[in-house]
Image (cartoon, rainbow, N blue to C red):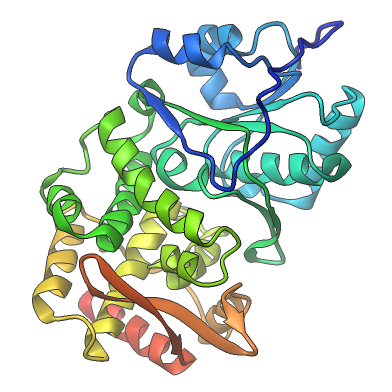
Length: 359
């Protein structure tokens, strides 16, 4: 933990909008020139990111206190939240100061949750360092922690004051994490359709994305979030592939090789696309395009060990359940999806179909 006697004052321009638009840079110099306009009073930083990028992050945050914490889904817990609240108390952060959150989606989730609940909300800035976070997790104003095996069951809606994405952070990502981001990008392209869908089908997932593509991908989510900031209607489309994806991610956490978020979403996308096809919503050619793309990228992976009882226990904690009815988006064509009521047995059938493909 670094410390200093006084924290610099942030810019006055920290009032969040309905949906905060991210800014992206390929150049470290341009990134720092813009980001240094707003200095934090405290920063929470992923320890691995800090080890790789210490000079850049030190320049970014200046002399303010900096706490390194581990990344990954295991950080999204009440004990971690209590630890972070204690730091907000220790450094007396208030609504006239700003907190920087530098890391992947899990750190942004728990950090934003703590910021949005501290003194009923203090300004915070997202500086996402993973592909998934830059086009998805950092956007939209959701925060959250996990509880009793369920993902993001405790959380808030709170927009960051700013979102800054530097593509250089992606150069140090493990290949598995890069693939994870491309799965979220594929989901965005499924929702957008058109040229973006064709481009994603043709792009190898080993490619490092540049700022213009990140802006296009982020714009897909931003448009939906702006129309539905607290997930009453259209925003539920962003859960494409995530209903079953979150189940597999949660069930894999206690295994030797937990799935990344993107790997789990790839499972969900394919299984839920099969259900869309089975219902007669999704034509065979589009289903095969998705299946073959995920096969080429080696993302048709084995399922984690599970029992149906445990699988259903996780599934039925899904936040999209309304009056005991499960709803999820089903894919109809590139650029077209709708939310439908779905029965648990239909999702069981999708899982059985998937398991059969692996034998």
